Image (cartoon, rainbow, N blue to C red; front, top):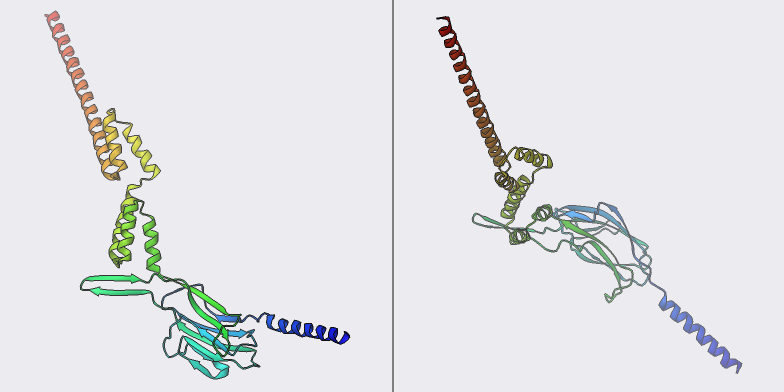
Length: 294
């Protein structure tokens, strides 16, 4: 009975250690990066940094390297300086020795281009790849000898910023008319980048011209107060609101001047009449005095 109990206890202990050994979580790969690797980059930007990889799982037979950077000049994409090993391929598998604790690799590459220019006689079409996010500086994954992934991979990503796209999106946001905004965006997406930008600039300029400042509006309203004809004042205000600021002001100034000139002319007529009447009175008075003296 005791022997059976001891055997059972020993079996349970062995099973415990067996399952504990298999259920120990694999250590995560740690990557320390030295050098520039910003989250947002420009297309064709050159990248160079040094990766120090540690925490490699003991069960790993290979480290699988992958990058979206492209080769440029005569620099290798991967340069394992301590191992005297280089590779120009974006995908690379590095055998891992049992006693290795860290791996140092210099990563060199160029950000992919997302702009495509096509020329058809005098027409230039510019297309932009819709994929501008989710690119990776590196994807490092430990695997076993059969290529099966082992827990503990690491990835560093970046986004490609296109200045022309960002600039046009800001312009399109200023177009309040939804139809025109969608029409311009469709032109841009079809490759008519220059034409879409010119039309957007024109619409924004017209919008800016049509927006009178508060001071300009107040000054124009003060001019309209000088009109006794309310209908004429409303028409001038309508022209002003349509963006015809200079024309409305010039017409208002002209009409006010005409009104002032007409008023001055009335005063001239009145003064002339009074002067004539006064002169007649004086002449009549003198004639009367002459008759009395005779």
